[in-house]
Image (cartoon, rainbow, N blue to C red; front, side, top):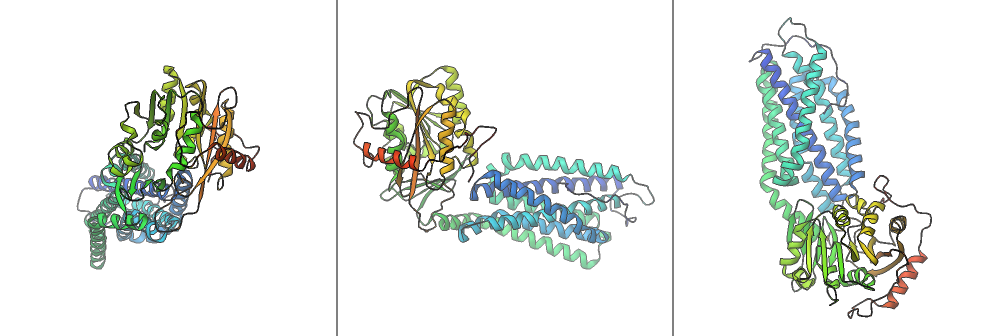
Length: 539
């Protein structure tokens, strides 16, 4: 894409072209279109992979885009030195860009899997790709002016307009192709490699055919060899990408990977089980550990079940583990699970290890699954006037950018509309020990929505850890605590267990009282609520 000034001076008259000037001009603009599409795919690939591997998509997008735009200005300045040899310079530039952009996703994933982090690689690729993209435009401007007839006076401003138009339309196509074509059909790694191959072919073919008379014999051979090497490397990487992905997954999750699925929403990985400890990862974050998940789910569900609980809704919880706890109450008449990703629900129903862990709760006739975004579902449920006695928010950590709206004042306002009189809502509010301000922001946001709150916490080792990517690379995981907020309309809800509560493995009224005192002792005062237009959750 164009983000830097270009020179409007007309270069010297070109050597004879193999086609008419009008056709040559069309070919150059076509390559501008292809290069712009490939460039935007590289940008989006870096943003998407960085958000997945590092987290906090707003920060990662800001880093990638700001570094790339800065680097494009540097590349535009450096390209001045190549204008006297624009044809060979552009050919070599596109070969380098194809290799760098095509392999960027592969290298980022490799550094994360084997080195434990990819921040430095992300900045390096953003800088390198930005420099190469920025250098394209001055060289393309020179080439498009060289297709003019000898002696014909060209309107340089018209050339710039055509160049910009082709560049922006190409960016549009690349921006739409990435999420709707490349990512779902080919995945992040293969999609980037294929884009690099298209980039190399387009740039090399233009120079080697249309501007071949401007090249020396040595330059022609240099371009042929450079493009052949790049295409060979990209083809080899494409052929080995499945083996690479399996090896990287083993490095990340260990040798116990049993299920690995990339859905339209997230990556789902199950390690271990049946017959051994089971771990469930969503987008690389450990969400369930069979060793101690009962601590998290008992603390999430049972305090909210004190009181009437005939109709219950779980927002999230597609793994069926919170549903397992709810369905232990025989007087529950209906349970609705609102899950965004149907693949999680299907896995929880059919996987032997996970279905055994949730005690086949998703097959209970009292349970219904709605595949929907929780925010949208609450809005629809509020309009239909379906009151619920208990709303359980079993959602990802509020520090993960896509989840921010699910911890907003507007979201809790919608949730309060579906509560029956005397109903309760319980929210998983993230780790209190490591992110106290985010935790108390959840509490403040619930209160801003008109609800009365009772904060509490409990501790465990693994399950529900959502403070950031937690890959099973063999490194020790520090003990974690889980923060919850119980809220209700009108009177402040009592914190305890129902008289008909089933026998629990780790939770008791005494544990809850200690958890409440511990949470209040860590209170952060003066925290403002979070809204859709002013999100307050930061890492």
